[in-house]
Amino acid sequence: MAHPQSPRIKIFVADDHEVVCLGLRALFDKTPDINLEDQASDGHELLKKINSRKCNLLLYEIGIPGPDGLDILKKIRAEKPELPVLIFSCLPEEQHGLRYIRAGAAGYLPKTFPANQLIEAIRTVSQGRKYISPSLAEKLANNLETDSEKPLHHSLSDREFQVFCMIASGKTVSEIARELSLSVPTISTYRTRILEKMKLKNNSQLTHYAATNGLIG
Image 1: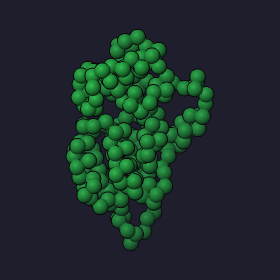
Image 2: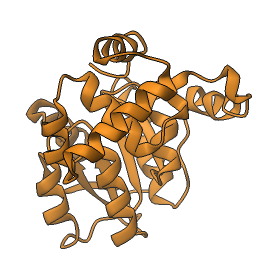
Image 3: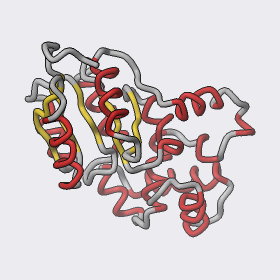
Image 4: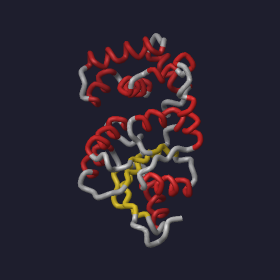
């Protein structure tokens, strides 16, 4: 356990659920070496605030409204490479953890984990180390398996996976193009490529696959 005189870990929380933020504040208030410095409830607010705050760690719910979670993570890693990002999310670790760790996250922690494990992860990541849960460590090891043994969605690039999840969530090609600041033909090309890689025929099959594999809520 950290000594009470240790430098405080200043945390920026990005989460759109008030109950979660209140719970985190109460937890950190009882933890001598951790302080909740600031918070944001959507991706735009996060990107607007994060560069002006002197924080030691970003605790990030990747499902908040606004720009895609992977895009935000990559932007923050490019602009503030010294700031560790710990993902603390409702989205399942087994489906999203590897992709976010590869994109530069210092750790991925599902919200189902107990409070003491969150504190341990925060302290580990704030020291410049990675926090990998036993289950995610197993996934990383299993990732060495041959491509033919991997789920089909693992063959998608980050952008393809992003578009895949947005289509599966019911968004139209036009809506996706607007949100990602890309052209409609570009998104249509991504959709065609995704269907080919996934060996699927239409959006209905794509949505069914995503729901069956826990990729969407």
